[in-house]
Amino acid sequence: MTKHILVTGGAGYIGSHVVRKLIDNGYTVSILDNLINGNKESVPSEVAFYKIDLGDISELRKLFDENNFDAVMHFAAFIEAGVSMKKPAEFFANNCINGSYLLNEMLRHGVKKIIFSSTAAVYGNPIGNKIKEDHPLNPVNHYGRTKLIFEELLRMYKESYDLEYIALRYFNASGADESAEIGEDHDPETHLIPLVLKTVLGERENIKIFGTDYGTPDGTCVRDYIHVNDLANAHILALERLFKNGESDVFNLGNGKGFSVEQVIDSAKKITGKDFKVIKTNRRKGDPAVLVADSTKARDILKWNPKYTSIDDIIKTAWRWHKKHPNGYNN
Ligand code: UDP
Image 1 (cartoon, rainbow, N blue to C red):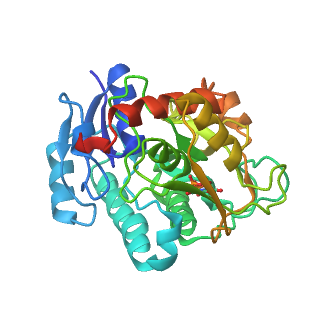
Image 2: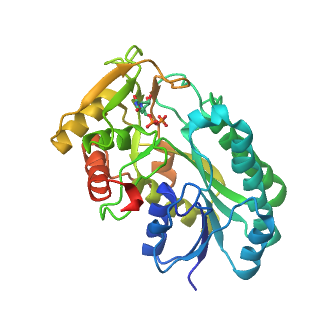
């Protein structure tokens, strides 16, 4: 019997890539998504799709009553750190309270395995170089705080209700599937790589570099860009671990390599063959200078082996998606 996985937020950027990997690995998949940020166009035809908001407990209960899920992958959440600083109530309600409804429904129906989409934002300003999982948890924005609160909830439910979880702390998810059928399409877009590529396409007049006076080699922020399909593979490995009764745990998912904003811009110029206007401007609030993962634990325990290690390779896949879909899923 194939295992049936409920993917919340499965119509979103990372969720949609994971859904394809689940199908490729022989799982039956159902998606729950309220489509506030998700795109129905990304949902494969063989997947059962439910337009449900996690805050709607009666619809959620009906979904669990009518299906026998073996595990849940939970992506549905608000994700913009900047927005979270203006709307903490919404972030808490969606990421924590609605997430708790999901956990409670899982327990009510005897579903005791969950993979949770967490974030490097739980660490806050890094101490030292590469961040390991035992780095202090001091998020500097409300987004990171809500993700940390949910992780804590998982630890509580593990201790008291035997819920098994794996929380995956992503660094900077980027790139797109090689097919260019699915990719990154946020509205509004705030992430560096899609904004740079939209500038290449002439949808934006320029790209702004937020801060050139950081204590980094070229003065711009350094991030660990990890390809979305490498992230997706880690989810399959984490799920397999839970099905083999592996321990609940947290794992960093990153390349282990940092690239500065300027390096990303230079790579985009090289890959696309186009020049564009770059404006150096002030720092963005809440941005640590450097965020780079130590993902040794995921490599050792999950046997995860990310394939896209160069920024050029990642941007190539993102460029293919943006070129084919200049208006995202709208065309
Ligand atoms: N960034 C930038 N200009 C932009 C968008 C982002 O300089 O228009 C910088 C941002 O300050 C950060 C890096 O690019 O240092 C990555 O930002 P992004 O929003 O993509 O991801 P984050 O690291 O915030 O999760």
